[in-house]
Length: 590
Image (cartoon, rainbow, N blue to C red; front, side):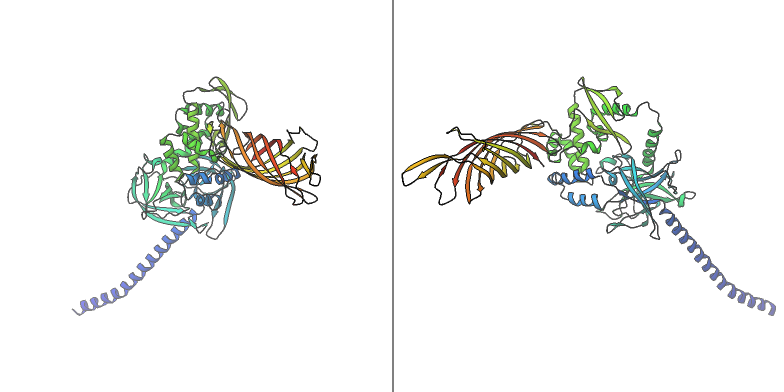
C-alpha cells in the first residue's frame, strides 16, 4: 500500500514537470511555424515584385496635339471631365502589368489592360524592388491589343531574363482565396500593394458591361485601387513561380459598392496571347494582301471596320468637323459614341464615327483588292472599277489602314451654308487705286496690306496695316479770289491702319469654301509733315478657300473697295476725292 502511494506521488511529480515542457515545446513549435509561414509569404511577396511591373505609356506628340484640339468637342458632347482625363492621360497615367513567357517561342511579354496603351505605340516598364531599386525597360512595343476585352500585350526586350507567372488550370469557385498584386497610385506615384480576398461570385454577369455581357467575370474582394488595373488575380499553387498562378486580370472596380472588384478569367488571356503567337508563326505569302482582303470583307458592318483604323488615320480628322461626322451616324451609333465619351476612352468614340462614315461611303458599292502590292505598305484596290490605293502601317501588332485614297477623314463632303465655319489667320495683299471720275492712274497708286483676320459664322473682323502710295486728287480752294483748283497730289510712302467689322456667307462645296463678303471699314493714313487723313468706306468681294491641312485653309481673294477721305488738319480745308481700289490677297488660317 505504501509502495503504491509512493508511485502515485512520483507520477504526479513527473506530470507536473512534463506538462510545462509540453506547453513550452508547443509554443516553440507554433512560433516556428508562424515564423516560417510569414517568412514564406514575405518571400513569395518579394518574388512577386519581380513578376509584376508598372506600365507607363510613351505618349506620341501627334496624339497629344489631337487630344488637346479635340477638347471643345468632348465638352460639347457631355464629357465635362475631359480635361481632367486629358491631364491624367498626358502626365500621370500608369497601370500595372505582369510578366508572361511563351513556352513555345520563349519570348517575354508583359500583359496589361488596353486602355493604358490607347493611342501609344510603346511603353516604359519599371520593376520596383522593396529596397527602392528600379529596373527600367524603355520603348517596349505594344504588339497586340483586344479592344473588346481591354487587353494589351507588350514585348519585353530579347535580352530580358526574368521569372514568369503561369496561368492556373484550376476551376475557380465561390469562396476561393485569391490575391491581388499591383501598383496603385499614392498621390501621383505607384506604390506596391499585396492584398488578400475571396471569390465572391465566380460567374458575374451585368448588362451594363456591354463588352463583357456574354463573358462570366470573377467578382472578388482583394483590394484594388486606381493604378491596380491590368494586375494579375492570383491563387496559391505549389510548383509555380513564387507559388502563385494567374486566374484572371483585374479590369474593373465598382466604386459605389464595397469590395466589388472584377477580373477577366485567365482562359480569355491565354486565347489572346495564343492568337498573337499563332499569327506570327502562321505562314503567308503576303500578309499585307491577306489583311487588305480581311478589310474588304469587314465592310458590311461598321463595328468590324473599327480595328482596321489606325491612330495615324484618325489623327487626320479635324476635331472642329467632328459634329458633321457625328450627324452622319445613326441614333444607335450616336449613343455608342456618347457612351465612349462618358467613359474612360473618349477618343474611341472618334474612331467609331470614322468607321461608320467609311461604312456609309462604301455601302452598296464595290471595293476589291487587286492581287498585287505596290510596295511594302501600299495595296492597289478597285473602287467602283476605279483604281485606288490603300496605305497600311503596323500598329500594336496589326496592319492597320493609314490612308485610303478615296476616303479623307478631314473631308466631310457637305454642301451648303456652313454657319459653324470659324477661323483666325493672316493675309497679305496689294491694293491698286484709281479715280474713275478723272480717269487718273499713277505709279503712285499701289499699297501693300498685312492684316489679321478672324471669322465666326457670318461675322468677320480685320485689323489691317498698310503701306504705300495713293493717287490723291483734291480741290484746292482759293478763298480770296473764289477759285478752286483740281490738283493731283499723290501720297507717297504713307502708312496707315484700318479696322473692319463685316459679314460673310460661308458656302461649302465639299472640301472647298466660297465666301462672298461685305466689310465696312474705317482707319487713318499717316504722312510726314503732320499729315493725318481719315479714310472710310466699304469693301465687297469674294474669296475661295482650299484645305491644306486638317484645319488650315489657304484663301485667294479679290475685292472692290470704295474709299472716302477726310483731311484731319484744321488749317487745311481741301476736299479729297474718293477712290476706287481693286484688292487681291492671299490668306492662311491657323
